[in-house]
Image (cartoon, rainbow, N blue to C red; front, side, top):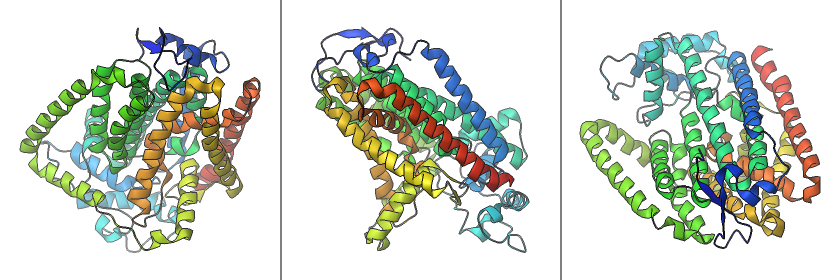
Length: 478
């Protein structure tokens, strides 16, 4: 991901122009020397990925089919596309498939985990349980086409087996997400922070659960992490042309995958603003023509696609028209609802398993709320520390991306009076984990950082163990 590029040193100040360049393989020159030395980062990254893969495999084995939010309807659409002999995105309903999935939901005790009695007689289609299963009539197609291609290649036809195949595909996308989090964090903060951010993500119980779900959000999360890496490349002297084009492309993919990717469009505007604010706008002079050319090519491709897939573009229009239609709901004007929404958003971003029915112990969630607040304030503390000046570019970019994604959740979900789901924050999980790691350590003098690292890692390991032992395993295997 780095090649022979150079990363500008920010030893003088993160807000001024750079004075010299150091090899990118040195993970950012002075930035790399801010934390404890990492002797073999490649081997350590491989170990972290292995830990994550083992946890993901365990999650796939423990959590029954259909027990992640919205899995039934997502699988149904992938199933329909996978069995087509002639590609047709307008074919989105099959009552027979829905009936088979509903029967499987009964067999895997879906209603018990949803804390309801199983209906008798059993519903014959999703339309009879529309209060639980949302329609997929206008959903963007990218994830479903990707999943359908996998199922056709593997020649898997039975719905439960298909769901497991798509869960493994999600885990593969999550591994790529992990690698992009590492790459972006390393360029902005150095190897030590990259290790910390990636390790926290690999141990994150809610992330590993959602990384094994049949849900387009797994692809959007990858897009967000690629965005983090490419944005880091732009701020640290990477190729402006390839990175700028990549940012545009990954944003388009996210927009054609799920509404949760909409904040990336705002991030696409924010990244050059951050670069300008940090005094690095000169490097963007060659980027804007490249971005403009990319947008023009994408626009031309869009016109061709609109002509070829006119009906699909009409569905996308309906989809985004719904997303852009919002109002300030009456309940959203209540301070109590704001407090509950914020608390549940944060809690479900750490661990509330199943269809938001199995939360982690309240004591642990309260500690994580306090740690998250401490980390965010710690980032402000770190930005003011002169010895951490080389990290200011990373703090600025990471803070902007996290705030944009969070604002998107409040504008799109809270303002309409809907309930929160923490995974809506995961497109910005890369910068969030990096800021969490940096913010906690910024409170302490650097000589204490090794001890803080041990304490933070031990706490997350303990929280993960409690989540599996007291929440996930009892819920699904008890």
